Length: 255
Image (tube, rainbow, N blue to C red; front, side, top):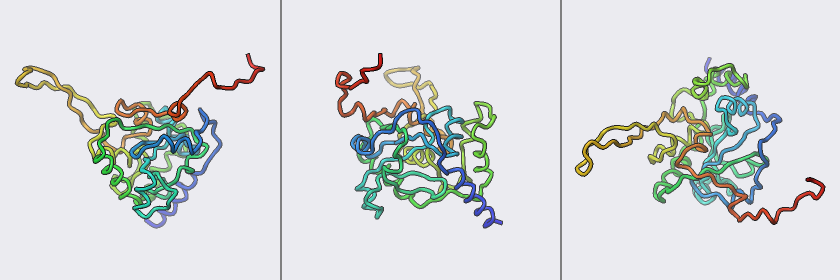
């Protein structure tokens, strides 16, 4: 039975990950310009063009349907990966893998950079992701995949985030933002923590109220969370190299 479910799941995953025509919300950044701005530890969000991407964008009410962690060329070469690879991502068919920048060619992307990340923690973050290359999604969970056959399921808004959740809970099964959320949580770097205010008495401030952070379950993170997080800066390649609007060339025929 497990073999049958695995074959069925693999076929369904292949169907859902097949590219379809979508209208991007913005033009793609050329690969060279994108790479010139990226730093190890950056999260690259992408507006995917597959069937499952359409469903994720609908459920999250966001442009972003995929996330990858930029770890750099050197770290992956040291791990024995192909020299052109510089990202670690979780793919629904192939599992956690390394890829090159060409994987995101022609896709609208956004760079989200963790602010103030210490170098020692950056290295731990990269190592966490690299060490998990080869982990795979459990394709026997056919029902997890079948939900995405409906690109705009009639689901109440407050249930949509939970509908994104995939997998059996096994830590060796991860997709997309789940992998990256686990990596950042492993170094206690916040993404969108639950913040509670609690009273605390300090010697110099009796009766003060302080904020206590609680980590969300990693399986409930979605790609847009890195975009809206107050702890990640949005990096725009068009502006990083210097932008002068007076140097732009406009069509003289337009008003």
